[in-house]
Length: 384
Ligand SMILES: *Cc1c(COP(=O)(O)O)cnc(C)c1O
Image (cartoon, rainbow, N blue to C red; front, side, top):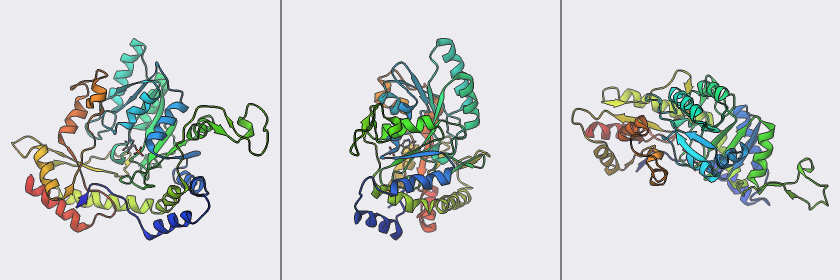
């Protein structure tokens, strides 16, 4: 079976985790700051908080930016549901901005049009969440410029994108956003099993994120409202959660980070080879913006469905029958029953819907062999 994505675990990874198992700290040990520091060193951001998932990270990112009832968060419909759900956790409302037909990312022109309308109606968003789909960065400079005009904050959902670059600089450096969130789920670029990380350059947001990650509790006398009462003392000064990452996971993360650049290079080599092997097939291959150096979490092809060719479902079924576990990223979030109950309907975001009718994520991960790649291409050739 060839999966669309999967983890790469080495003996070094295993040794790193076993070492923690033999140590005295399974949870709040030394590997957490080490992992955070390695991601800071890679991105150039100022503060990092390892958390137990990107979903938790998105939640506390919204809370740190004080999203609440009466507020709006806008994101792309072409994403995993977590990019939108984080607003609902905070009691805020969600709306979407349709995608760019070439990058499949949130379209800045459509964002601007929607902002002009929302301004007239007095319902401007407090937060916009651009998602770097497949690892290709959004047009962050354009979105950032609009944030200055319309007064919204930006959380980058970079779940696909650690190791990628925008205009030559690492995703996560926060040049064009308030907060960036990475995911380390096993299909993503590096893994900690479950896990995520929240990055910011703001000292104020960092203080809030630190509290929100761990029950709103602090041991820092500077954050306390009354004097320390003894060495046991801590204070709860906000309402937070238990969203901490374990030391076991962080040790895996530290070990995985040493291969980040290697992984991205390998992914680019797979992309180049697919491009070559697909050159004569009726497929739309992933178009890359010149500002982008994608992390290539996913390799998404789009079928050209005219001329009575095999349908999307037929292609999918053929590949699955050949044990090629292709997938579809994503079912437009506004078409999920939970969101349809909030009033969204088919036709609301036509580019995302058209993409959904044509897209297939084919195998893309660093341990994919050339033989497996040839097998995937051959299977597609048969059915097309
Ligand atoms: C994977 C993913 C998430 C959620 O990540 P978890 O770490 O599984 O919580 C959020 N947004 C996007 C775009 C993702 O791909």
